[in-house]
Length: 287
Image (tube, rainbow, N blue to C red):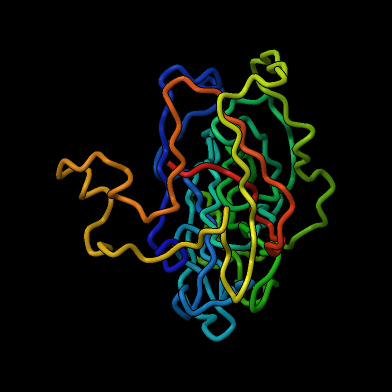
């Protein structure tokens, strides 16, 4: 469902955002989602997925359809914007940039960071970045999201692209050119706005230690020996069951999908080397 398009952004706004004095606009118009799109159903894809096109805010072109509409993000040159870049990718990562614009990163994955000026951002599935800037002359500029794999990873004919349009610019596609990135985002250069001391390891301090072995066999991925299967009650979405009063997780999800953890327990999760195919998909939590 996720790879077939049942996905979108969920933004939680912080009324006490320490960066709020740095921007004037932060709303649904400044959210930018990057996604891969396939012309076949996800359940028919085996192994590495090759997307047919990149969607930026739900719109994009494929090699066989260069007349499709592109997403247009409109800004005013006199205002400051906080853009929230979100990768809702199923598989590829993207290198994101805006022609003739630098970006000031101020947040990543919900953590406020010290300002960092970059001219491109490599973003992987599930990652989020906030950046500032809309300070160029009135014109149209290409927004680029180059995937690491796909049917065509170029920008020919508006592939893998959207449009940043300043108010007053003509309703036409940009004429700007991409320049080589000289200040790409390096995650080692990101530092929290508020630094906290890291936790100290305590030998034997975990209440529960669990190994998650990632494997790949016969065209299916598995974690801890369990592959995803369609639940027997798939016509009743989990959320609907919960709203209807169901509270036992073991009755909501397939067997082998649940790790029971006690309240206030310290849990150590170990990911030993397995046989799963390596891919650009950083580990992250859902829910």
